[in-house]
Length: 203
Length: 203
Image 1 (tube, each protein chain N blue to C red):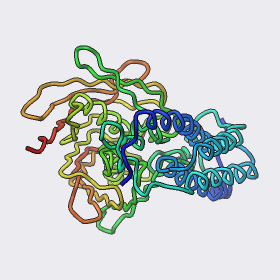
Image 2: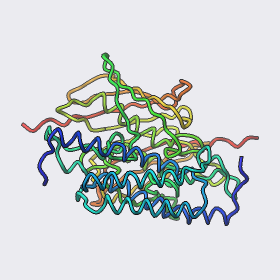
Image 3: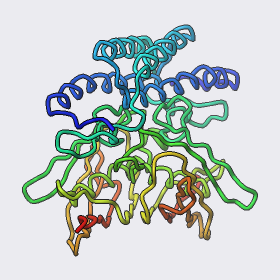
Image 4: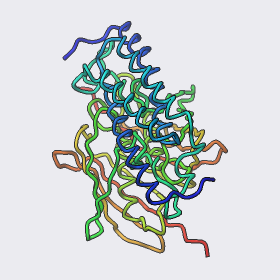
């Protein structure tokens, strides 16, 4: 087990890797949409393998969460929704209004496709799981999803989407949250409700 | 709009891009877990940008689904769950048993993390959406998710997982499917039920 990172080390590493993840997001997208000659595809593959060889030459054995940040909590650099080092992550950024409402705005292209030209229903589920659960999180007590129900009322075109969520009620460590996904044109495309559980701290 | 691909063109392109996507999956993983010196991170970033520049120098304007394959259907190369060109895709491969049961086996590492050391609940949802919907798909009539309900009964550790689904009943173009996610040790970690709808073909 490595020692906890200092605040400076954490900031430095995040500033170093954020542009790498951004470049990698671009690369994922163009790999899907490219129409170049075969020779250029093979040259790109060699560059990708060279980059993986460089970064892979010294690896932490587990995900970043096996190490701790300055606050003693696991590092979330690899989180698939918002991790600063994870090119799969959109990355999702939560906005919190004073009334407790939680929002995120995303622009989702070819890499998140399901039905032709539309967002995969599972990506809508990922976004809504994350945004609904954010209504339940407390800094000292992260919340886990208990149940999640999704109603797909219309297809969500690729492009700009917004997800919104709020708390319906709270009961003894459980948050009942509701929310929805909206496409750029405004109408709701997916409705969600979920129960999120905060485990009791050890006595 | 480009003409449909011939079977040979489709096979050729898939064989060309599958190893690129595989190399990119490895690169996504090591970007999350790397512990190399800053200079090597910056060299890797330059290689990633060079690869993106090459592949991005001639792009289809939309996702591959804006083009058709030999069967006249949209190309699914970019699908986020199984697309051959999509490095985010696991890729998910469906096994169908004679009794109609649908299964997939996956090995999911650092890029799919939510809670420390565990699969993100939204990735479980993506997998289950896809596997449950596969019980409803017909070659001539793809199915769309109507509702999906997920019950998270235990955390799913990163590593080997299996998802299974089967049809509970069918009613006038609707398939009621159920299924679950199992971790490597066997117990069910997530239960799912969903309603999948096949739009009527135009009369």
